[in-house]
Amino acid sequence: MNAHQIPIRTRLITHRDDLPAVVAEYVRDVAEPGDIIVVSESVAAIAQGRAIPPEKVRPSLLARFLCRFATKDGSLATPAAMQLAIQEAGAGRVLMGAAAALAGKVLGRKGWFFYVAGRRLAQIDDIAGTIPPYDACIVLGPKDPQKLAEAIKAATGIDAAIADVNDMRRADILACTAPVPPAELAACLLGNPGGNDDQQTPIVIVRPWP
Image (cartoon, rainbow, N blue to C red; front, side, top):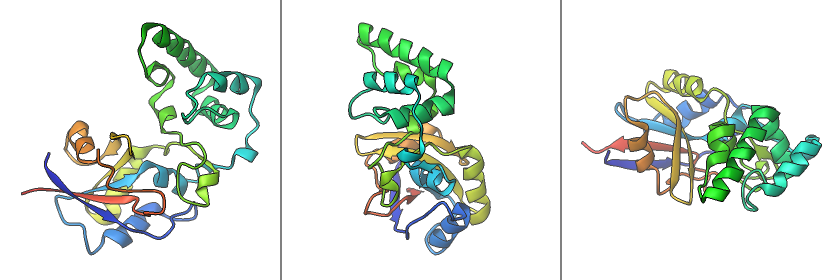
């Protein structure tokens, strides 16, 4: 899908905000029928109150053990982040993911932990992953992203999507109301046109070329 990307700069969106209403406010004079409003998964999660200060997490012995085997620059490399992953997916699922990761390491394969433990654990951002003051928090993935995308569409009248995008040319569409293959929409976002840090552009309008 060939498309033009329009980043939308916003104020700081917090856990006190009604995200669909905020999105409607900012896209009102920009979005057009046929567009797709793409909202950052981190901001979606923050608006849902899913940004957790690490000091409020009590890591278990299991979390302290497993985090030692996580990639050093990964999102589950701290005891607090691993504990939240365990709370999200359950200890059994995380242990199975760890076993899969070990097998993958032996076979030279990556990504088996998240394949087994659950895609939503890959959405966890450890501290320094977003804008202040939430850069001091662990941000979980958004809850029920499809329901949220539908609420944004209802508030704006425009199709909406929730996406996890980073600077390493990776894009994952968590939910979308438009009849567009997720891989095609993800390809439009590989350059990471939005930004959750000082760019403050957590909303991107994807406008297909005529």
